[in-house]
Image: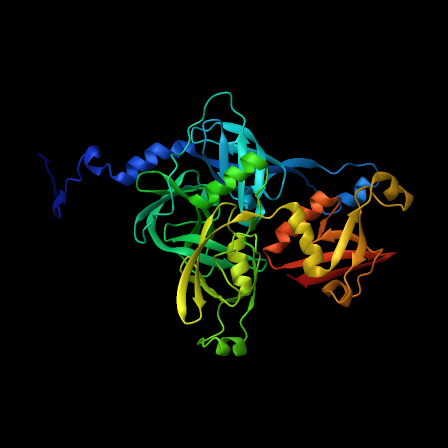
Length: 442
């Protein structure tokens, strides 16, 4: 039986109510945090930077060396997903480069190596160097999340280690647009997420990992986003098995719906994407038809063909994607399984979509023309193609794709695969001493 304490005072009598025993206050949230906290880490990236006064460059010219010291240049959170020490975090936490260090809840600091990164998905996998097994988070799933269910976020906001916040799942399948691209299929939560939480875990009430905290909405409080663990886990598996994320391929092409096309299909507006071509041997064969109008992905409405490309490009090989279509006067749902766009197929896109065939120079041929080995020479340009229309000619040099220097056919294939699902590519062409960047739509 709970006893109450009465205290007499000059001004009267104060009552201190019973607040219950520790056992009575041990909620599911408390138990989940106790189980998982040891697997949440702080991730720090350190680099050697120049320090000293603004005139250090002047005195260095006279033999004085400018002071250099190691500084923490990035800090975020991460979660251990395996006893061997694999850590899942956001790519932007370690993107600045430098040495990576993690700090555990018990204060231990371990060096970590970057095993693999997926910049387009904002994920990275690290391996902490430890002679002993490390505590790791139990894995959950995000496919059965319910709007309104309780979630828990743990991280290191503003350097405050192991801060716990709670909230609910506010929405699912959220889309976030940035200046560079579109990120899809986020979990939205009102659990407080602040700078430094990036890469930390989003947990369900059972303490299972259901998401990776990634972003906050800068114009409002109480709106945060997390990458669903089902998608993150597919990417982790790719990084561990292949060292990179395999690019999805669905085998169909789309175009925007113009107002005239929308009217011809008896549509109320031009939102969506018109299927223009279906690869007879691709994943869409037997599921999609030319003239279908894709209006939604997994129940989320589409704005344009680019919107669809971005959403499909965010998937991984083997993922199942439900497309809602208008086929004549019928509404149809078709589920596609993402295939893999091989390097050879991606190089083929350079010819079929842009009109360029490029060949790799061997070491001897490259030396004879004063170029590095692996430099790509434009062997032919298809008459009337987009490349021909902008003036690319046989004998030009293909030096970079999307500002990434390219040497060799393998690098060419990977760069084209990354560009394909974005729906556009920028080629850097060299002719003599003239360099020119040229953009193309797929």
